[in-house]
Amino acid sequence: MIRHIVMWKLKDEAEGADRKTNMEKVRQMLEDCRDCVPGILEFEIGLAAEGQEATHDVVLNSLFASREALDAYQAHPRHVAAKPFMAAVRTERVCFDYELPAAR
Image 1: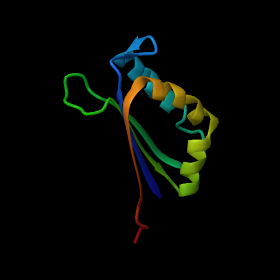
Image 2: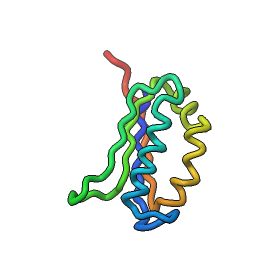
Image 3: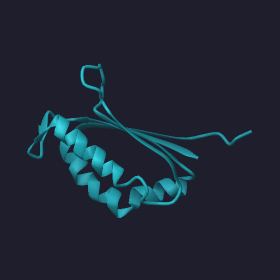
Image 4: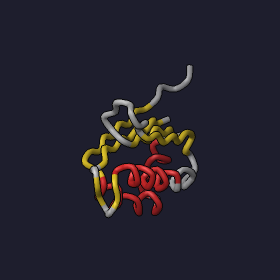
C-alpha cells in the first residue's frame, strides 16, 4: 500500500477568485477524482480551518492499494485536467509518498 499526501498553499487571489473560493474549487476538483480508478482505499480532503494556524490551505491524504493504482490515478484524465488550475492558484505544493509495511 502507498500513502499519498499532498498539501497546497494557495495565492491570495488567482484565476479571478480569492483564496477561500479557490480552496473550495480545489476541494471539488479533488472530490471528482475520489473514485476515478480502482485501488483507492482512502481519500480524505482537508481545508485549513479559519482562525487556526496552518502552513498550507488544502491537504489530500490518500491511500492506494499499490504503486500501480497510484500511477493510474495520476494519469487519469480527471486528475490530469485539474493540474493546470492547481498550478495557477498555488504558491507551494508539497508531496510525500511512502510505502506502508506489509501486515504482520
